[in-house]
Length: 157
Picture 1 (cartoon, rainbow, N blue to C red):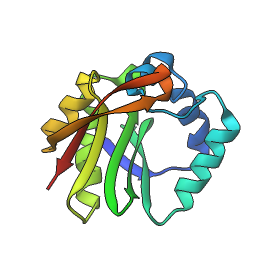
Picture 2: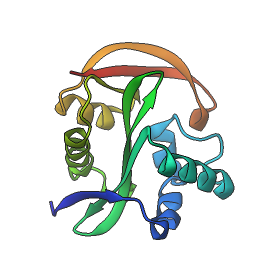
Picture 3: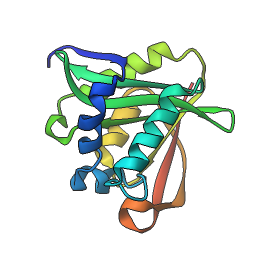
């Protein structure tokens, strides 16, 4: 694997991140996505909001300088959670795990929480390898699947 790095998201990244977020295979796997991943106006509004929020640390994930995804830490009801999205063309190369390790180094608080569709075994493995432990499951509505599915809840620290 090449060098995985994190950097602030730039305006020039938005087109590629929007396209990555529209990949139907990745959308189905992630399950908990926006109501319409093809709605560019909603995407732009969301990105503007999170990029300006002091409660969100959002970063571009690069591989040898090439944009391959995004990752973020954010606060919900006082708890810090993480999320990530890697371009499907780069799945299975350890990029998500390395990016998560870099993000966790930059997040000073513990515990940190994560959620993942229970059948998204690849993402679940990434989180477990990073030291997260499963704390339970719940059933939640997944926009990408237009129904309720089981979600695994995890905690680090």
